[in-house]
Amino acid sequence: MLRYIAGQTVSAVLILLLVSIAAFSISHLAGDPAAVIAGESPSQEQIEQIRRTYGFDRPLYQQYLSWIGGALRFDFGTSYHYHQPVAAMIADRLPVTLILGLTSITFALVLALPLGVIAGVWPNSLVDRAALAIAVVGQAVPTFWLSLMLISFLAVGLGLLPVSGSSSWLHYVMPTIALGYYALPTLMRVTRAGMIEVLATDYIRAARAKGLLETQVLVKHALRNAIVPVVSLASVQFGMMLGGSVIVETIFAIQGIGWLGYDAVLRVDLPVVQAVVLVIAGFFIFLTWAADVVNALLDPRIRLS
Image (cartoon, rainbow, N blue to C red):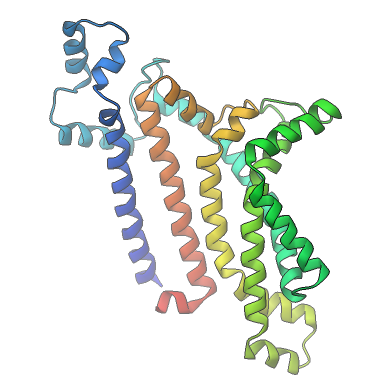
């Protein structure tokens, strides 16, 4: 098991290293970073002064090593627009996005797991068709459209929930539904497929032949094996929620890290864009690593393969 974890850790570190190189390259792919900082109609002397001040006159590899060294200390430099430490800006907004991501993935799992299990136990039944219909609708409806419909119906029409902000748990209800409903269909279908496959195996027939209660067969034997791919998928979906929350955060005026990244792109605030990309990628890689470890604990065949 330790050898498996070590191998996965090395892979995660290498991927994060590649992502850091890509994130660092953003500042140079967008053009001359010194000219971006200088603003409109700068003189050549001003650009050269900024280039020396920020170290853009150094070789690229030295700039990268300096940047990644600071990033390892959670020092991403200073925002070009707000003139604040980027690390402080991210630390202030990251909890908002994490809360939104956790509530959204919880909402998706609470609905997807029971629906997937029921649909898998009774395939091609009326319940199964209803669950598949929910999945089709969930994938067909864009997140931004669902967000606007929720605002129109629950906030404007009925006045039950606040439209924007993040100061109370009520502010997270509509964003959670909008973001979580997109992940629900995939999680439900994987659970359903896993249950159908597991219930057709010989050891499930043997468990039933022993006279075990159907609840024990489904929960203790079938669900434990069927849920293995769901763990990996849920971690990936959670990572995607952190990165893809920009649309929901913008619509509901939730100032999380997604909104921060969107605002930084509009303002060409390169240090913020680099930091947001690296932080979100770091979370995504960590979640994938954690899912692999959990799956190895649930299924010994994975760590022996």
